[in-house]
Length: 281
Image (cartoon, rainbow, N blue to C red):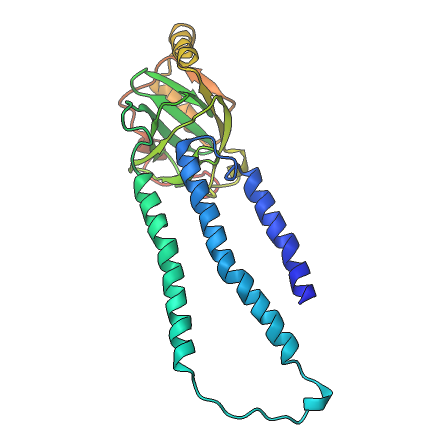
């Protein structure tokens, strides 16, 4: 029993440590708060099952271990116990129900804006090999590998891909969602404090997958508007040729453009074929 517990402690500790490093246990927005509360609830509920099981396991192993005095003991044949069988059938049903109801409720609620009374900021997100492109349709600007958002305002991310399937994830703001060529997924997130939050690709997409990271900076509304204005005044526009180059496989630093080609066909960058795991046609 002691060996079993001593072997589990490092695993549990490392699991919690790795999860915390990802920011899941450090929520900075209403969506992340909901998911955090669901995680804690699930851990507590599962602990109510796991702890008694380990205790019962230890007791049974110790009490019914083989002894010299009972070496030739042959236990009597026993049939089932209806009361116990009903009990250990009902208990899992209750536990699964207690876990399923809040999970379903949270899943459906997070498909909507966390602050429906406010107009969300719309940002189109395009995953490429191996970079993230952020377009602001209402403001007309585009950034690469970073995005700025206003604090306490919902953001409607419209996710798509110009290359391999990927997954968009900002751990401190909320869970991940897939990006797929020719399809658009919607993800609502919101930051309830200022700061910079790390994002990443959560789906393997080739040899430079580990470099496919980005940052989301939450700012006051005034600072966000000032950034938009400076971008429109000082940054260069992005042409269709520039967009073709940007979507070519490879990594780039952060970039900012005052405009982007509105009717650009992202799938045309595939040139009639899909990219393999190394970003080659």
